[in-house]
Amino acid sequence: MANIGGTITLNKKQSQKVVLLPFVSLKKLFKSFAAIFVLLAVWEIAPRLGFVDRTFLPPFSEVVQAWWQLLLSGELLSHFKASLFRSLIGFVISLLLAIPLGLLVGWYKPLAEILTPLLEIFRNTAALALLPVFVLILGIGETSKIAIIIYACSWPILLNTISGVKHVDPLLIKSAKSMGLSPVRLFQKVILPASVPTIFTGIRLAGASSILVLVAAEMVGAKAGLGYLINYAQYNFQVSNMYAGIITISALGLLFNWTLVKLEGHFTTWKATQGE
Image 1: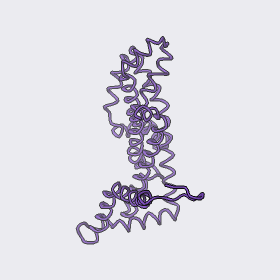
Image 2 (image 1 turned 120 degrees about the horizontal axis):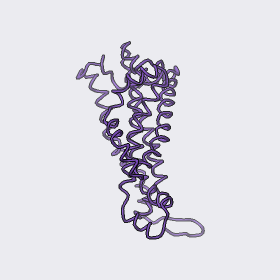
Image 3 (image 1 turned 135 degrees about the vertical axis):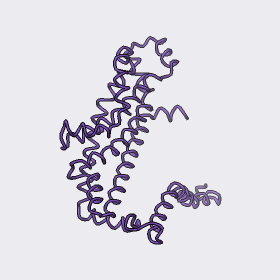
Image 4 (image 1 turned 30 degrees about the horizontal axis):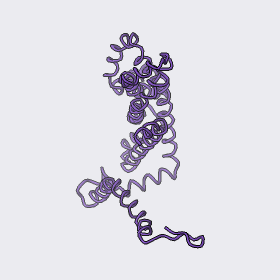
């Protein structure tokens, strides 16, 4: 690169790199989404060629048209808002309950000895198996739906938080104690930061659980939500609308995961610094 008379000029090698950058980016993008493109192509072609009955699996383009019509009518947006509200409320409440409890159980051994047998019982009880219990006790309204999401999300967060605290490198703890840190400062400066990556693993698992359980909860006594849309479309044989709801649920799950990955990167910047 040269600066002649205030004008920046690129040599031949540098100009070739600049030209290749968009091509490299497009190639990387294609590799990342190649499997998805192949799936969508098979979905479009297979029903049209008669490999599957298009009554039960319409071409992808017809599903997109149905999705667009639902969006224009406002029906899809109302269902999306209902599902997003329920999953967010349940997810946030589970964070507020499970993380503090997990930190306490992981840090204080006497508390862990008391609660571990009870935790082992409930961690092996599937959330969907308890859905009828939640409906019977709390009714078919919003309370039971949010409560089952809280239950499903709490376990991945709780168990990963406990694991994160218990498996902090003992050398870090010994080094901190040798510098005279009090138990409170030790927990604040060493235990908690070292546990964050494992805690976020549980949070991301909980994000996926909140979507999965939400669909089942909305199929019982709901009048709005993506789970209700899918169930209603199935019973009325609106197959394209059903697949449109499934695609929207998948998009909501991807949005959750992407947001949590960004948050994890923000709270674990020290990992990048350590690796450099």
